[in-house]
Image (cartoon, rainbow, N blue to C red; front, side):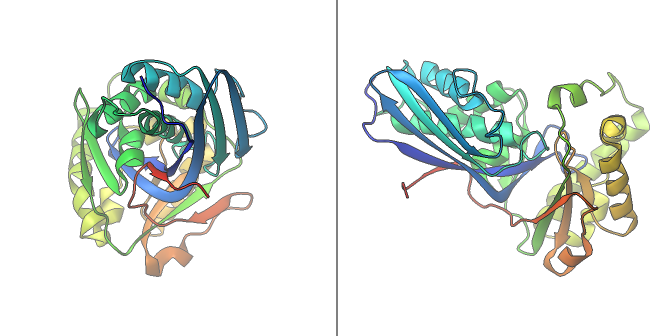
Length: 295
């Protein structure tokens, strides 16, 4: 293979998955970004990390960006002799805002951009990111932007344009959560009545997001997974319940413990964070992961 001589810079958005009832399928891209700069070199590996995770992320082949780059280069046809990787992270780590999906998507987009005449298209990159992450909700929103609904194997995605007045607010605690451990709390079966309720809410969700934000409170109700995860993040579960009791559409963001409130611009001030939590009013990000000019 022939590799591009210069570096590429990729910007990737944070994402919130599930949005209540859309377990492992619904996602929303948020205007909070990580940036990764990757250059092919004559040999060796150099990894630099700044911002979120700089105090604990590995700086070798174990780094998720690096492992994802390796997988993408394998799929594209071969490994470069060496790599320099620089990560500037703004997305909170292990908080349910898609930091791992951002790393994966940044890597597959960067690898694609570094190869002259790449053999993969946008759908191939989506399928690879889905394989690496293990579920498509975050990676679909991260790659396509806006609001997305993913299904099937191989994965397919429908992107929809969120309502112009939609104004997400992320409430981020100091505590972290392990996606693997939290998913382990889910039961193998759920009561039929809960599954039926979730099906109705999930069917309502696209309309609420795109044209009827007045329906968001009903559309984000979940009876499939949040109640089972609550013991691992009781403060988050209590905050969701309190916000919803006050008429605010709130849900656990991804595997948590961040809480996402989906409100309109005139309601943003009603969403307040508990003491010790960060409050992040965020726009919807219309663009997915993309190569941007070097600063």
